[in-house]
Length: 221
Image (tube, rainbow, N blue to C red; front, side, top):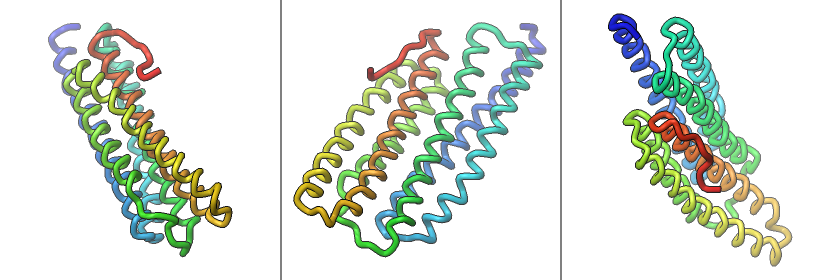
């Protein structure tokens, strides 16, 4: 790549990175608000989370278009091409995390005025960990830090353990209180969405490793 093309590529790829971080911030906010609307049973806020997901979708497609234009006009090779491809895959996972946040909000609306079955303890822990992992995975992507990406992926075990604890507790409640099945199921849906967010973050970690090392393999199998 000539010096002129190098400068142009670096400038345009830096803009892609900025947009990826912006997308991550939008989804991080959506995850935080989805928990808030669940805790407070705020259906108006839940609808806002659902409506705001459209902005996430639009930004994801805009970044994808930028990546395709970068490939077409700058013709990156080797590590540069891996970086652009990684970005394209990462924005897909971030966008789907937004879908999971919206899924929690939709559950809040389905719940209506019914009181929560039990105090929320592990779901807020899952939310905090998922948000922490999302930020760390994006930093690993920007820094091309494979070691940090592996550490982030490892944290998904904690999210999975929290999800299993929630699942087991709610199944136990349902076995003794058949009239609580519907309310227990709502909480299971919320926890499952958070568990899937953890899986999506692991995907980002995999792409960060691929970008920096060229090694593409599935983690946490």
